[in-house]
Image 1 (cartoon, rainbow, N blue to C red):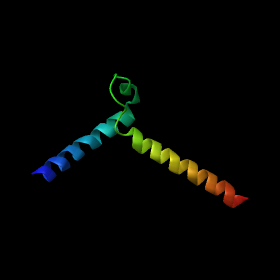
Image 2 (image 1 turned 30 degrees about the vertical axis):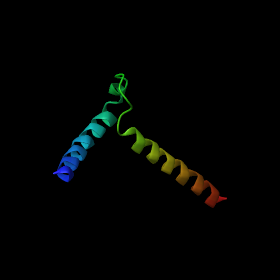
Image 3 (image 1 turned 120 degrees about the vertical axis):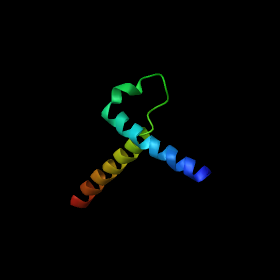
Image 4 (image 1 turned 90 degrees about the horizontal axis):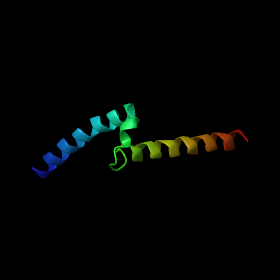
Amino acid sequence: MGLIERKNSDVGRKPAKLSDLLRPKQKSAGQRPAPGTNGLIFFLLVLVALFFYVLLVKR
């Protein structure tokens, strides 16, 4: 049952991430950062890495 509960909790987190992305103003509610912030930071790091990679390859 523990695995099933985990899956349900994970599924419940995904819509929260989408709502946080659509409504970033709700982040400042005094709570911890939105659960999607780690994903956004990772995504931005990948974009920056690709940007520098393209610059180096063009040179």
